[in-house]
Amino acid sequence: MADPGHIAVLVAVSAAVTWALRALPFAALAPMRHSAVVKYLSVHMPLGVMVMLALYTVRDVPEAAVRQQVWMAVAVAVTAGLQVWRRHALVSILAGTVIYVTLMTAW
Image (cartoon, rainbow, N blue to C red; front, side, top):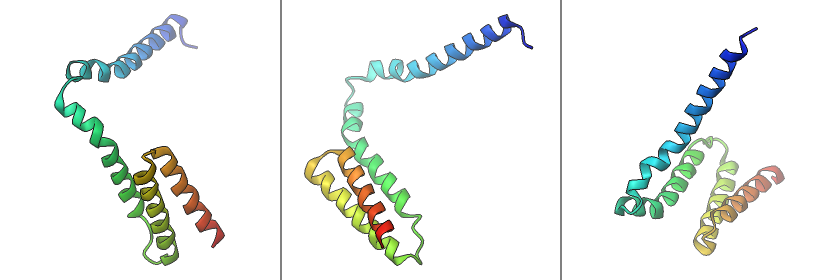
């Protein structure tokens, strides 16, 4: 069995590295908090991330499964429509997911 002192040092080093890695982004962004680039990214980045995730998900639909493509198109349209109408990402994503799963299991 390992020495308790050795284990304590390992835990302390792991805790210090974990804390440093979590604190580093906040420390790096502190001087840039009032930057025009950061403000622009904070406004436009969520939409960009959503588009990339949607494209990544849609690209894996098999071409042979026409019904699955139709259900996915319906779910994407509902998700996009809700996002444009309500501007609430969580509601849009949940509604689109529920519609897609419901359509896939019902038919």
